[in-house]
Image 1 (cartoon, rainbow, N blue to C red):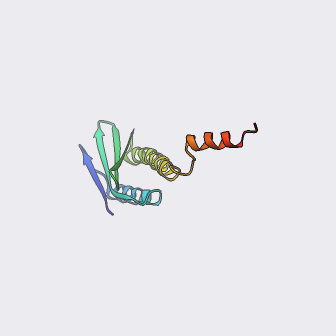
Image 2 (image 1 turned 45 degrees about the vertical axis):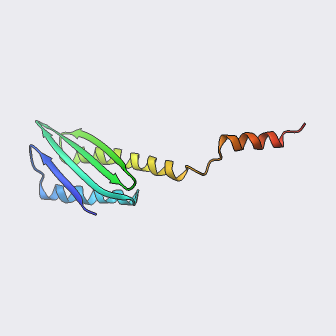
Image 3 (image 1 turned 135 degrees about the vertical axis):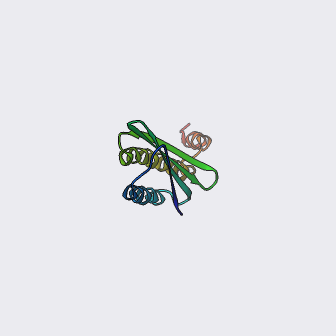
Length: 115
């Protein structure tokens, strides 16, 4: 899987591009169903806006963005938000069937009540 990096109204240094690619690929450790990662930097005057788009299997798309004075700082902020989104989603789908249904809990309590 490759990380696509795009820049609007400016450019990134080669070292920064390598840093972004390396850090973005670590998202696979949190969620292995990631199919594509796109990082877009928008240079707006003195500020840089970083936006990360992650496409995952089964039509799940995640978006995170952050703004800072430097590209690496904006990317780090957006990456942290993306990690939180992916962790929360993964926890949600893993715990989906572990909790009993409300109807099952009520029936069990009614059956165990002394008369």
